Image (cartoon, one colour):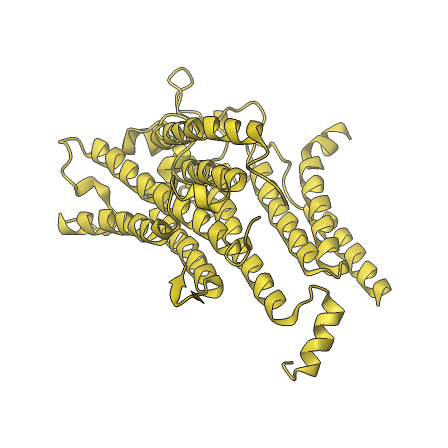
Length: 127
Length: 105
Length: 145
């Protein structure tokens, strides 16, 4: 039973963060709060991938002469770390684009609330 | 309307936890992900990179070798994505203001 | 909102700390071969050193450190360095992005090591310029004091 929890609790924390991010993206009415929910969702996916690459009793993936490279169970899996490196920086850039779009919406319609925004867009025949 | 939203969230959470029970244990060093040969008897990517990174590129850090040498094409595409995102922000938000006849950036 | 002229502590500390952040970021970029680090991490830290001055001292004074109109050309230069290394490998007879063929030294493995260093420098310059450019764009329409 203890082994079961030790093996799976990492995944369950990532799923909890996913649900919190989804709550923010669906339930809140302010546009900025929705964006923050999406950012939390991105972070939870990164944590999930990095947690799935670990091995018990292994060390960081930097070559060490005392350990050698004949037994690959001594180094953790480096491939998910590489993929998540680029995912973090791409996440920063796309959040920048999202905030630029929110600023443009505010400059045109002068509101950040979702229901008021939909009413003004219908009045302008933009939707 | 709010009840439907809450129901969607609970169903999502339950589905994800049920799906995560099919994954291997988190620290298993002999799962299918970390073996020497994949299921169809070809060399597995992660163990090949661990064995041959120091021999191929004289560099101790395996993550940098994978990022820039074995998977350098993906890093090129990703850098183009960053550059395009910066360009989109530039085009959306920079306006030229005319003030006393002079253009200001 | 009153700032910068009435906060000597914030102004002094940020002006003192910012060069050391830049130095540590250069260390992280160039030691990407031997310890955790590399191009993406160092480029983001370099951008943080410039954004610190923009946050604490305002936009006019921070133009003395890094002008806003240098951001987009530097971003293009970073992508050009990456592509250029790949094309130089093509000119010397290998495949695209196959650094073993560029004749820096006689050993093939060392050529790959130097090729990886050139690529990391290109990535760091591009990431730094784009993050500072995004910050400048988001603050375009507002004026301070």
